[in-house]
Amino acid sequence: MIDAITTEIIRHGLLSACEEMARNLCRTSYNTVVYETHDYGVGLHDVNGDIAADAPGIAVFTRGNDYGIKRSIEFLGTDAMKPGDVFINNYPYWSSAHTLDTLVFAPIHVDGRLVGFASCRCHVLDLKQKDPGYVLDSTDMYQEGIFFPVVKLYREGEINEDIFNIVRFNSRLPSHTIGDIQAQVSAVVTGVRRTREIADKFGAETLTAAMDAINVHGERLALAALRRMPKGTWSAEDYMDHDGVDLDRPIKMAVTITITDDEMIVDWTGSDEGVRGPINLPRGLTEAFNCLIFKALTTPEWPVTAGNFRPLRVITKEGSVMHAVPPMPTFTLWGGLLGGEVMLKALAQGMPDRVPACSGGDVCSVMALGVDPRTGGPWLEGMNDAVGFGAHAGGDGEDGIMHLSEPGCRNNPVEVLEIKGPLMIDQYGYRPDTGGPGKHRGGMGISRVYRFLAPSTAISIVYKTLSPPWGINGGKEADPNHIVIDPGTENEERKGSSYNFLEAGQVLANNTGGGGGWGNPFERDPAKVAKDVRNGFVSVEAAERDYGVAVDPATFTVDTARTGTLRE
Image (cartoon, rainbow, N blue to C red; front, side, top):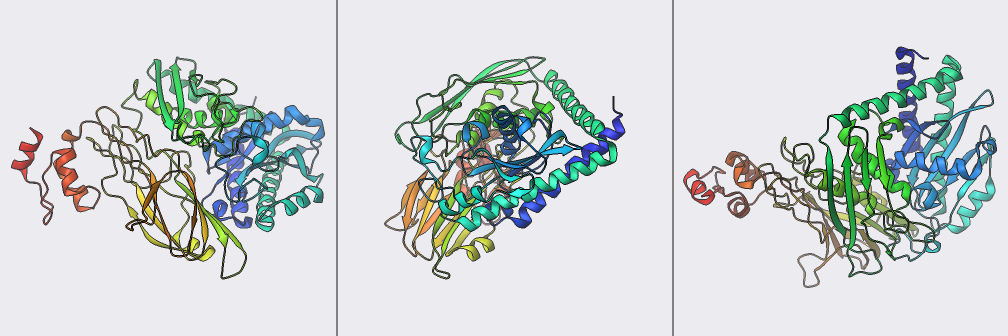
């Protein structure tokens, strides 16, 4: 037995260690996607690989690290894991991500006894995948880069130069890629050191007992929340635009969710099979995004522990888009970002007062690369842009924030991008009339316009452009995501996910989707509609068309008589 006060002190010690791990990762990484965007997952795990503490980043990474460590233990065994060892695992079907989202982890030993693991996952820039930047059309795993299936970066504290030499001679950006992997090493070594200090203070037995107690408590909290939720079974489906290979085939994500007093069962067996392109998900990533939605509904105010997810059961079919098996391609992984809101769509049928409408529904990523004329060397930058969030029973959706799959992430600042690559940001702001109309309005999407100053490749990674963000309880759909090449010119072209080879002076506008509305738009307070018009969120025309509210464009006052007529 361990007392509650000691458990709480150890819990906060582990959380503090995770925050320090994340800071060290950001301080030492080379890649703006890591140190600006916070595209990482950092955690401390018990001896079984179950997470006991984490630092916010990409939520599905942290939970996916559990899966990756467990598969690594199955493959290698704990006897092969020595003090001072540091491992890398990017084999997608084990690591629960694509090859560039490398999982680096280290065993934690105290007096020769294994007590846990420290983990860090982040996006590195290049590991010899077939295309620089990002792969959108691979048809098998062998086109997606080098695999490191649980190999040692460090052996008992000594660097394994063989692995780093493989990276050095196979990466298009070796200094950045090796630098980011070493930054991951710095993070996990920090986690090992801080956890050992806790063990030195309280004893290894007390530390492991505290980790057990943290997870048991996390399970109790989740079960208590589950028992307060409506019970029933609900189904929903939504579509990704295509798989990157069969461009005319929308890819179905279908889910059935059952809630009882003891568990939430999430069944994806109705989802598409035989998907040739790389949007297939490793099983670990499917589990991870299911965990994100489950936690948001049950224990959102508590830090992540593996116990939070014990009442969740995920069902998938091998060979489907939700459960890839070798050699199915997995590089793009976008179902892991879009699938969470399919779950919310199902749950909204049973709890419309607890679940928000669909957000813009994507991370709306642009990756740009080429040769920088200022240096003569290669450049590569990744940018994720914010979306509008769905409205909910309590109010309007948030305007222009990072997608729900990235709760600890940020966008890449204008000043950083303009320094790092030959581009300029011509425009950056909200997109009027993009939020779904409703009693509560969906959040606004944004537009960021990139002007390239040298010949460049701009890769748009967005897979929810055809299926609009849905509303709840009578709320209306929102304007969906899309990109526009050379907007406002005779060469203007609207696109979704695509490779774009642009000359100097060409422009790409990344237009992100708004959030769906909640409730009947004609029940929205006219004063709120007038305020939206004044703020530039809703046009005068849309106020009349969608809300039945007449607003004077000069004074932004409501014409009460005309509004009454419109609403009748």
